[in-house]
Length: 82
Image 1 (cartoon, rainbow, N blue to C red):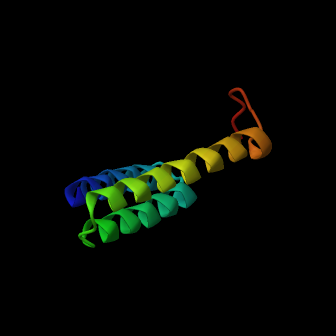
Image 2: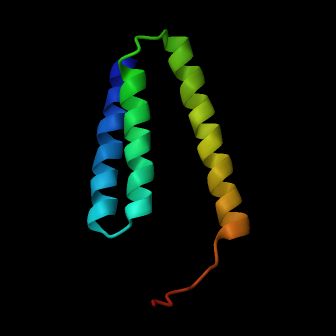
């Protein structure tokens, strides 16, 4: 299970680089933080059950955060570029 978290760290690194190249530096920093989180968890050698609990908590936090952002903070633009 630790290899899964190292793989998640690899993919969040790829996303961080792509966001940085695309000029979205704040999103890139968020993905760098997630990379550090996943790689650190990958080296802790926890039990499989604990890895599942941590991943479930991570998903809940992300889904609640995205729902809050898209409901209350996002202003739809429909193609208006500045």
